[in-house]
Image 1 (tube, helix red, strand yellow):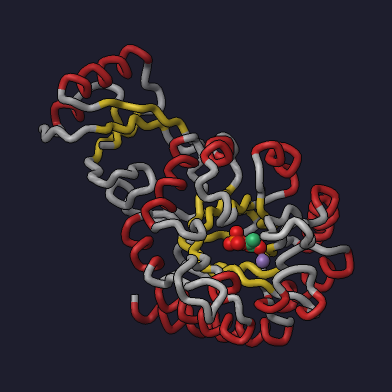
Image 2: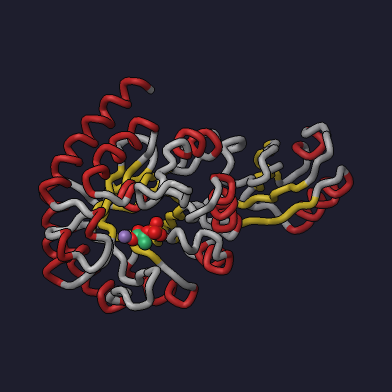
Length: 337
Ligand code: PEP
Ligand code: MN
């Protein structure tokens, strides 16, 4: 059960609602976000919802049988749209395209990427400055100085930034320079990090864990939402299976399933999903047909020289072709829905 409280609800009213819920076998937790104030009820008892709905201080009440509550489409039927400002949105409507290198490497590379985005009308740039690498000897990113440099150039070009935050201590220093905080697949269940991201007002994109289930991804999103931040995006990026002919198994099944279960926007990362450059475009197109609200793709002026993930990175020419086809595919999909 989710109880949406009125803005001016007082402590006495909250106590009365909590007592009533308790008497019918529900335990309530409180969540206050940038957009709403909620009481989330956990319990199994069957009851007449009007017993609670008539209490003062309540704006709306919904039954939500799912184990996750606030991210469920059972109470919020309207899809969530993330507004990054300056006309850049993710969810419902235009397909969101996010492009950029795996890692931010330096000024020239940032400029080349921004130029490519401007030429193709793409408004969100991806790139890692803190890189989770399987080997400690691989390039681990330019850190906060790289982010500041990137921010300066992106600001001038009207480009939004999505980048990975790896630990709680980075949030504060990154905050002024980031539009969307990415939680990487290795951190999907870093609950301390999720708790802290619930306390900020910037958008967060949570990637599915390397061997995480769809339900676990929704639980991770529930951490951030119940912590106070509704600006959430989910990302399917492939899971580890027994299949070895691709880097991961991009689970496009997750797209329609997530779209049904949650009101949050769903983005697909075909680069990490398949891990093979020539197959990135077809998987991106397939993601759109499956209903994705956006794609996030690795591109680089010279993929063979990229500091990381070159084997799955498109060059700018390949990217131009993909973008054109993505837009056509999005139009085609719009005819079906
Ligand atoms: C990335 O986006 O560069 C990345 C490391 O992704 P993931 O967490 O999905 O592996
Ligand atoms: Mn990468």
